[in-house]
Length: 186
View 1 (spheres, one colour):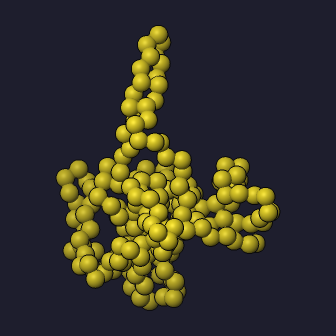
View 2 (cartoon, rainbow, N blue to C red):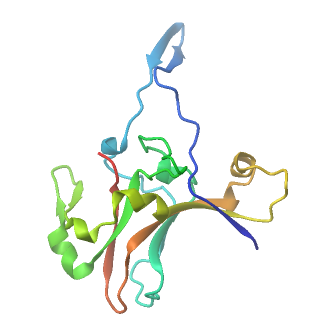
View 3 (cartoon, one colour):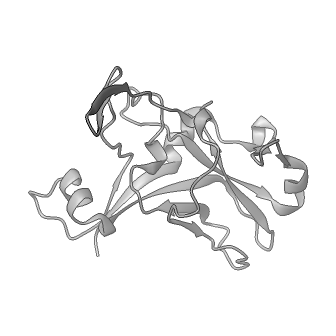
């Protein structure tokens, strides 16, 4: 099996000022669309297919590997990114995978009103913002023919495409961790 990796994938975004025409019975209305950002997300849907690696409660994960979470929706990590690709063509994902040692997680995690968790860590334990794009990618499974383009494969054979976020932190052998998806932008 051959694999192809892309630095990012973005679904078609509505243009600013776009409106949606609605009709209910005989009443028609144009409703302006407003793009939401990462700071508007309060919870990920339980039905969002995610594949963590290592799996929950795993104890045998090679310390040479990075923890990751894969998404069946290939554009998900960049769905709410408020910026355009940088000068090198990389796009920072709107959320970041961070792992915290389970022993330290009790002090790092706190619940805010409404059940939303807050993760507080020293900046030295977090990846540098300008490196976050390196910890995300899209993976496409082959075979590939010369005429196939990414959009066609995503649309016609979505099971061949997934996105993945990697945690920048290395996991120590025998240590237990809590993995957190955190917004990259406010």
